Image: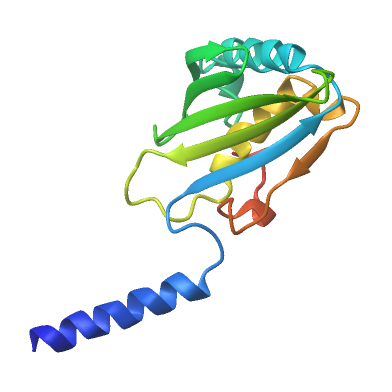
Length: 164
């Protein structure tokens, strides 16, 4: 009996794992390319995180608030975001990589839900990252390009960052 239960569980989990798009834990990896130096990208992101530390910016909806800068240097930013209603916490990292001759910046960003049981997130982890890029105006930078998809970013294609 125990063997059948284990086998059934393995089949169900395996089917779920191979038929769902995206990570098996709510998270998002995004790569951005900017035609400006990493120092400028660093300043813009850190400034935006600091501007959105209180709940004030979410008084009328959305989640462009409750960011907390954990640590930073010119090549790495670590922060947290807390959702204003349910108080879920997500860990954010930004790795800034200069390319050719420090004139452009490649950013590898990751947002991961701290809740171990989080599987689907309605694109919240994507919005945690994108809202900072958009809020700082970096999405208007020359050479701006974003690279991600539903396989590396939970529910990216259905994310609504005006809500999350």
